[in-house]
Length: 92
Image 1 (cartoon, one colour):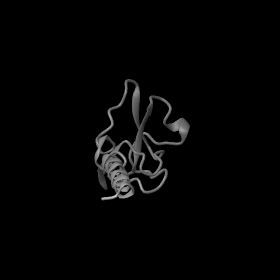
Image 2: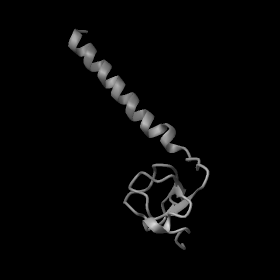
Image 3: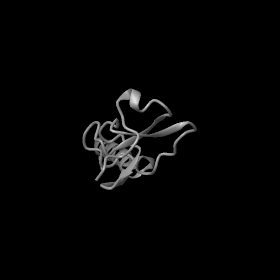
Image 4: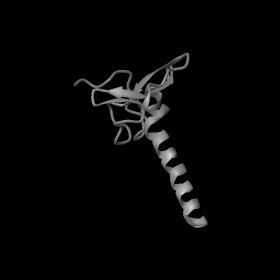
C-alpha cells in the first residue's frame, strides 16, 4: 500500500468513527434534567430534542422539523411559555 492510500484509509476510518459515535453514542440516550428544569414542548430544533415521543425512542431522533409540537427540550422552570413553548404534550 502506498503512503497516500494509507493516509486516505486512516482518514476514512477516523471519519467513520466520528459518524458512528454521533449516530450511536450519547446523543441517543435520554437527557437527564438539571435541577430546576422542566419539559417544554414545541421549541426543539430539528434533531435537537431531549427525548422520545410516541414516534421514536430518544434524544436527537425523530425531530424532523423545528418546533414540532410533540417534541420537547428541558428548559429552566418558568421559562417555557416565555419562549413560545407549551408545558403539556399535544393531545393525540
